[in-house]
Amino acid sequence: MAYLNAFLCGGLLCAVGQILIDRTRLTPARILTGYVVAGVFLSAVGLYQPLADWGGAGATVPLTGFGHALAKGVERRWRSRAGWVSSLVVCLPQQAASPQR
Image 1: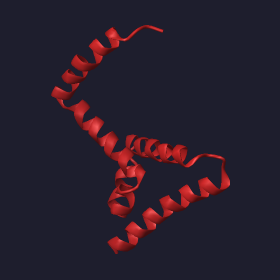
Image 2: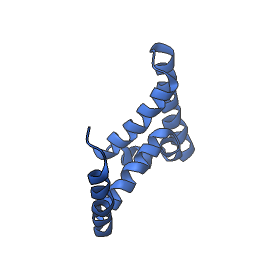
Image 3: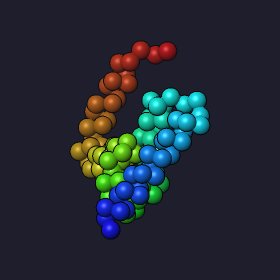
Image 4: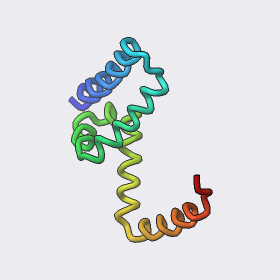
């Protein structure tokens, strides 16, 4: 059953991408970027993890899975105290040193 779920989930994601390529003027690069952003957004609202649990590799291998992995990594890093402190230590000096536009 896991193989069927992975096939259906991955196939649906690929079919949506193919429809977007065929029916819109979006370039494949923009569609792939949109998939990563969609994975991050769905992770942020809590919808991607149930999809990944159901679809297995069919949900985690495509680029939406990459966006989900990015979102989980940022969340995990931000929730840890060391991540919060290191984010301030790294980001604030870079922000202060960047030229104002």
